[in-house]
Amino acid sequence: MSKLFTQIKCLWFYPVIFNSLILCTNTLANATGSIDITSTANGSFNSYLKSDTLHGQFEISLFIDATVQSNTGGGFGYIYQNQGLSNQNDIVNNILYLNVWHSWFPESLPGKLSLSLHSYQGSDRSGQTTSGNTPPQSNSSNLRVSSFIDSLDIYNPVLSFMNYRKTFYIDVPFSHSTYSSSDSTIDKLKVKQWSPAIGTAFNNQYDWIQLRAYSIDLSNDSRTPGIDHTNAYSLSWSHWFDKQPGTSLNQLTISVLNGKRLYAVDHESRKIYNLTDMQTASLTIGAVWNKNTDSDWYMYFGYEQYKDVSTSERYNSVYVYTGLLTRW
Image 1 (cartoon, helix red, strand yellow):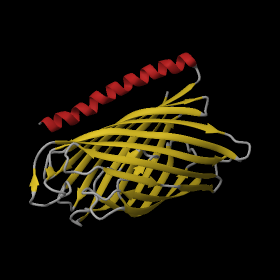
Image 2 (cartoon, rainbow, N blue to C red; image 1 turned 90 degrees about the vertical axis):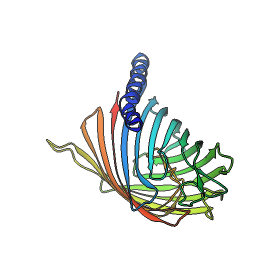
Image 3 (cartoon, rainbow, N blue to C red; image 1 turned 180 degrees about the vertical axis):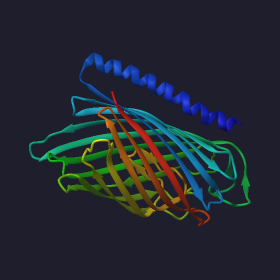
Image 4 (cartoon, helix red, strand yellow; image 1 turned 135 degrees about the vertical axis):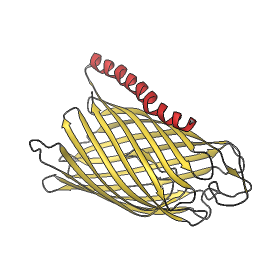
């Protein structure tokens, strides 16, 4: 009953605070007349198939972003995750998000150069740990149950370039993640990730294709036994539609991922893959609907494959992700 109450509280309490912050920010924007405000509210649910330890994850995220004179901006937000485990209490993550960015138009380049910094700070409380160096969420019979707090600190700078015609894009993101535990038997984990991407438009800019590579270095500890490096590649295609009377479908996107990815950071979707298991493949299909100039509604369906790094168990995940972007 307490778990249900917590989820219900998240459905109304955090959006109320979020809308109050939007009202204050919008008041400031109206006073200055030079700030563009957008708000984003997202929700997702994962169901894990053929897993002995995981059965589902519920997540909501709320963001406010501001742009000043089209070349400077920033944002903040909150991410709530509830990860359901079959052999212990649910793991609840509370994550705060901040970002700032600035763009330049150098005379030596035929486009816009941008630098942004994303930061994630959070903690979760778990009901299970282990003796010795046995990884958490292991099926080992050597488990002892207690309560401990895990914290994460992620810094993610991104350097990007877009040409004036908006037909070519390249970025070079770097992220440094630190996962710490109040349990002294669990080592601190440090993760360094490079994830460069290149994208191009074609078909009179109605289509966009983008390739991204993930190169992730991990400090080898009890969380990632025997794993100190992973590589993965993602390919996405987006198509925009002509506006037709009576229709609001604006965009269709398909993306695939292959390789091995552990503790990854995706700055485009502001998604942290803080699950302790290895992601080996994914397929995502989604669409964006635009009913007016003030809001976009989007929904994505996905399928993912994972491998438990401590037991070698392979399992799958299906998920739905939806959200609303509003321009104020």
